[in-house]
Length: 144
Image (cartoon, rainbow, N blue to C red):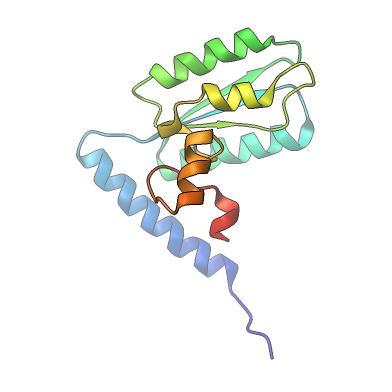
């Protein structure tokens, strides 16, 4: 017989742990920051980005939400990523997929600072994962 899992209870426990960890960081003068970059106007992607922004605010994180039109060039996106990579208030960057057709997603991923690549898609992070090195961000999917 299967076991019923109370997802709400598990989520609340995780949120409580996160809030405590964030409070500890803030007490040391560090407010964790997440930047989310969305190019285009896909409704599902916009909803996902809104939910990430709300979660950041609920947890007390610094949230940067960059929403760019689908006509944005790759060079413009790379310039924005360079700015986020250099921003000391941004500790993690999430690039919402898929980008518009004219954008080379692999080039965008390679432009991310591996230490800020929340999805763990940068080639350095993929290699670390394959080698069993726990440094850096790990994609959510393998964690279950």
